[in-house]
Image 1 (spheres, rainbow, N blue to C red):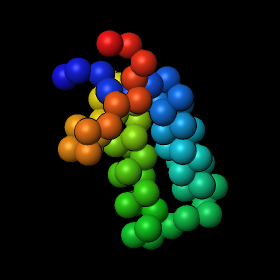
Image 2 (cartoon, helix red, strand yellow; image 1 turned 180 degrees about the vertical axis):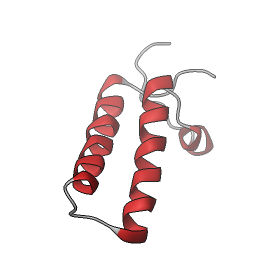
Image 3 (cartoon, rainbow, N blue to C red; image 1 turned 45 degrees about the vertical axis):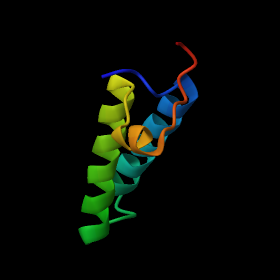
Length: 67
């Protein structure tokens, strides 16, 4: 897999994922919505760790500065 995510994109995804986990932990979100958002947060964290987003390849996007 070729990297296609830049540092800013990765940071935003990690912050959003942590925010969703915090909302769930403190009880602001619950039920089905909470599980869907937690699953998306897991995907955000995974894609941030590997610096690759499969959707970016479908849309031809690349936020990574390195060649």
